[in-house]
Length: 192
Image (cartoon, rainbow, N blue to C red; front, side):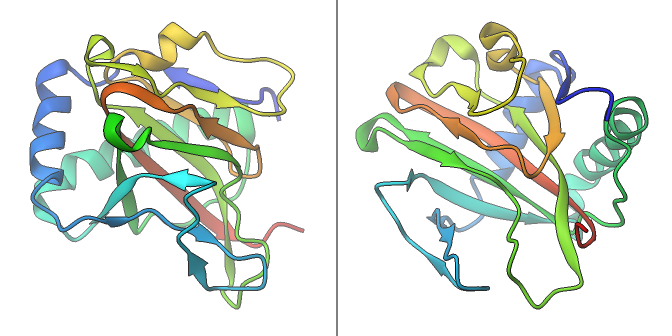
């Protein structure tokens, strides 16, 4: 690895982010869950995570451009920084962190180590969709990397952040407004 993370600052335009938000809001939401350490099951754990999520599948034609851009930027990020073996991206998660719930996601990583699948999540991407002036709190932070991206860059609408899925990270509580984001997990053969 040549770096712990990389980002594409304001990669998506404000108009494109707003369109993604509007299209995603038409999908039925569910309460965000966390993996249980004993396998494939998931739990609602409000002390760890408070968010609504909507799953966007690559087969949904409204989001074809999004999946194309994710795959293309992953190739660049992976080649220049991470060099991990990824083979697929089947869906992404649209997340909503609301002021009324003090929406947040405490320290976690994205790899489900114990599973019966042939793959692990290898490379994660998060996309900031909200105008940064529309919410307070809701900051993306790494828990244990040696370096950290600038907080104001991570809040910039349309910014895409890539990092290895095993790095712990968090979203601090939203105290005003709503933070919208997308998380994508590129999978590949299990970590060894």
